[in-house]
Length: 389
Image (cartoon, rainbow, N blue to C red; front, top):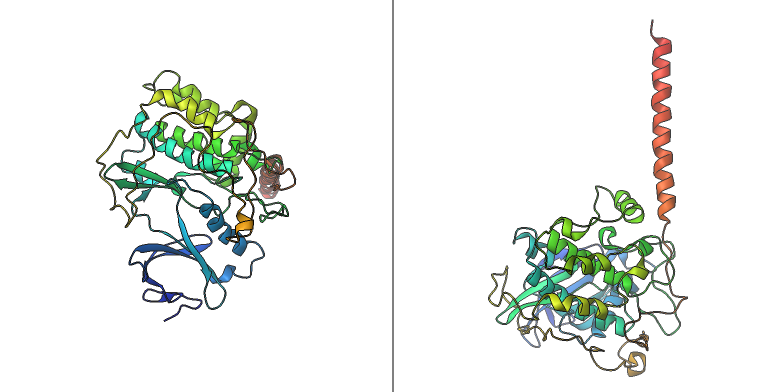
């Protein structure tokens, strides 16, 4: 039958995609494993939660994930095969089925950290995907281990970046799809300028996030962490992370400094681009997969036996020249052209920015709450002393 608002196992979407099982439920939608009746291949079907259909921003942001992924040619980003709407208008995305595990689980099964050559092999594939995204005017803004998928193949592990749902893409009119006053992302992997909602965000937000991922892969801990969102924000805004070498004494000489530069609190002290970061990391590994017959959590996805791209010298540009996607009629957003000077940070239009809550405002609220608590305790003690015989 054709699916309405509540798809379930056994239903068929668009008279083509037969739902086999529920894979998981996220903040914006549910992901199902489905079978494409036209090709016989497995696909991942992501459907927006019905309660979010009338939200003024989320449905467009949901489909923006498809737009961002379809713009990329790299094998290190998830492929989007189709988009559409259910009978009641709820949007869905059809993506390649990735049979493996996310980077968080991958690392956990290996003791919580990786050897430098294995970590760099994985990080370089992530950087290749994000480098192309930046060249096409796309910031990911939510890089984290849960959004990185590791797929075993006979040639080695292929890494794919997923979830471009909060990426920043610029329309022809320069209209942003994220609301003013909303900070999006995961604070442990967000630089201070992103947490503050600073204007003029560029590719260095993703350089920072990938640096944090590499730090975590090598050290087994994040540079900043805490029990609450506010605690993490305060640490990022007011402290400097311990050098990664403090946790990893056996790093190749110089590698720790590269990682520390990638996560510098001052963005002007970071690498200017993802290409610069790849070049800085290149001397510390041989460009080959260190594990060519990995033990993995699952099989390679149907039709997805992709060998990693050669990981040698970093090219000036990844992928074809910038197309005018809006003119092609495939989708409406038009991405910006890459920066004219190699190595410069991606500089999207200045008017398309979000502003988030100030870190200092959050700190002031927390301090005020603490003072209020002290006053309440003091008054209580005074009353108790006064009433005591």
